[in-house]
Amino acid sequence: MNFYNKQHQFYCGIDLHARKMFVCILDQNGEILVHKNIYAKPEPFLKCIEPYKEHIAVAVECIFTWYWIADLCTEKTIPFILGHALYMKAIHGGKTKNDKIDSHKIAVLLKGGMLPMAYVYPSEMRSTRDLLRRRNFFTRKRAELLAHIQNTNMQYNFPSFEKRIDRKSNRGEIENRFPDVSVQKTIDADLSMLDSYDKTIRDLELHITRNAKIHDVNTYYRLRSVPGIGEILGLLLLYEIHDINRFPTVQNFVSYSRLIRPIKESGGKKYGSSNKKIGNHHLKWAFSEAACIFKRDAKKAKKYILYLENRHGKARSLSILTHKLGRTVYYMLKHEKAFNMDKFLKGQ
Picture (cartoon, rainbow, N blue to C red):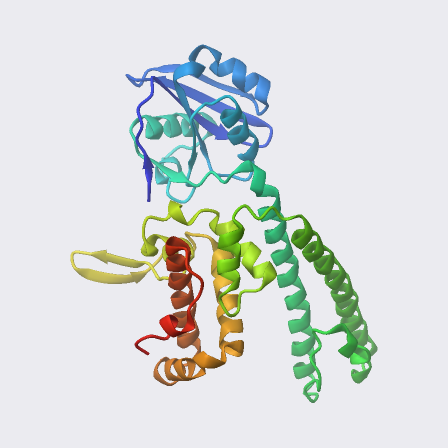
């Protein structure tokens, strides 16, 4: 957890919503100079901070509406701090909670150097990153439809499909194997949605590959050198990581990528684990996907993968492989080296 601890003459805490925002401005002594509710638009905000804008820092809790105010502060050269929503327990733990109280707490945390920071992603790359995330959302929905068809087939104890139904050419007569007309209609609805998702995902991938701004070509091709990381997965990792130097250690990176299990410990005793959802679940998915493809395609690593499965079981071995890939990617990007299979398997 990183805290913002730079000193300023004035501190502005904002409880931001889609239409309104409660603004609290403190001076160095903690006195409240401004505390009011205004419209969430650039003009009212700039008017509100006008007397203090030369020496002010602005803090906002990380919610879905933060893009515009971050860009506005960048344009006006105002220091902007994005508060990590899950770490800001002081806001959520009070007996009474409202926008006025929350804005004051944010300003106090900022002034005291105790505001936990989230990463302010560069504006010029946000739209493509969000499009890649949306593509993943549609891909998961498509997988749910395929799983429902498979489950329905097993529900009626029919023979397994002879061909892979994720391919459109193999889905021709699926609904006809079910005698009940209502089940046929259910499968037909799934197939119709699958066709729509196939077209949407294909169009998105074409747009992404043609229009994505590869801000670091060398990093992109280093990622592509890893078996299991293809064109779209490489772009997803590139955009989610953005700059490997924002992670001081490999532990910071694998923790952010949700590749390790946080441990709760007190007085030398362990109390299990928690906070598994703190981090970037898109990176978690990307590395998990890369590990599955690596396991399937990396022929030189078959012996190592078999060793992991025999020692830890299939599920645990896949988690270990995913973690190892995450650490490898970190050091690759940090040292500006391509993937080396012999080094990856060294000591195994």
